[in-house]
Image (cartoon, rainbow, N blue to C red; front, side):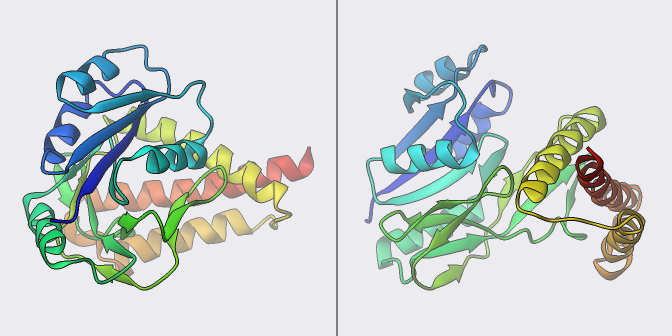
Length: 249
């Protein structure tokens, strides 16, 4: 069996963490790198048998993920966020690969979000492929303020089992995240030299709604699909308006 480290980064995740840790129990070790939680996150992780490292203050997503990856005891790592879970089907696939040998440098895994009480297997939210199982000798985290991801040197495979994702506690939480990430996106884009015109926010928002609700079949999810599509449009509109605000400033 090829050893695998299950790896998470955390900060104040006591509500989500127990289920994430439970889904990683099949790994040879579970490592939690915490950014200075003020709740019971570290206590919960230690009680579950995880190895816990403290790295605070928060250095940013890419730096924290890189530290966590490099601190693992094994070269093959399976990376989760605290609001994610390894499904039984995914665990079976990973176990099979561990027994037979990994053929690729990394593996992309479909991620299904649960929102307003149901799984969202439509819109831009699915299949939301994430490269989370990889050989750290051949890959690492890349990115800037937002949208960090793993890049590997070599071919990647795709698994069928899913990561289960619970991204938002409620609508208010969703709106807070939209506000945060659109601000980060606007700053990152502005610093990279990107600029946008006055009509772009409306045009991009309209396209985002049409793509999500019609082309990517958000309509089959009823109220949930409409809400996801509307909020995708709002996200697109807001990030470009914030970019224009930076341009004016």
